[in-house]
Image (cartoon, rainbow, N blue to C red; front, side, top):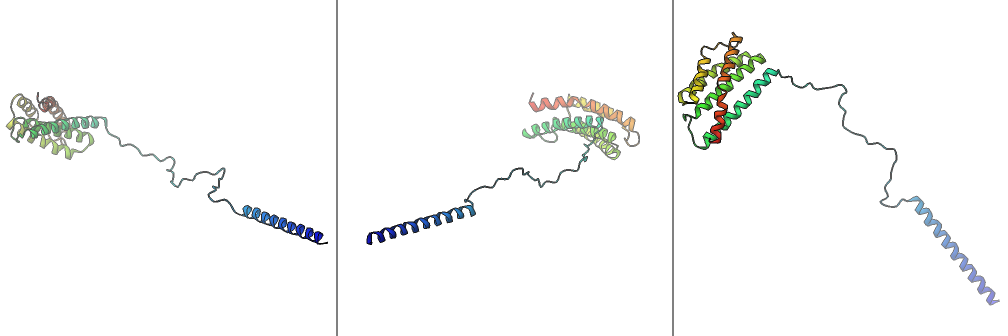
Length: 202
């Protein structure tokens, strides 16, 4: 009898233990189903990126600035003249030359050429006030250049001075003024090479 009672007790304990294990296992599975693992990324399919930038209105274009071909031609000539003048100026400054140095005559004459080009470009663009002012400056600069100039630069300057004698105002006699200004520009063109030679020390 004692043996049977002991066996029944053992079976009861084993059954209780098994039930406890099953309950714990069921609870663990339930907990796993209700929580997601930390660090798990959620991926969505078919999503598209949204840009916050506003698109430009369709059909809207910015027109490029229009430049008259002849105006651009004079602008290129002006840049070439300024570059030559600045290069020569730096060369003279590096050797300590004064404003009365004979080589400085080429600088004044190149500035006069720049004024002639500016006047012609202003006429093309219809700015006759600027054309008149530049024409007046042209004569003053040539006179300064003549005062300190020496051959062969002096001959170039005097040729341009003779060409520009009694030059008409562009605003009142545009055709005559244009012809004289173009001639002065050509008269002073050799100074570009003179400036390059002086800057190179040759």
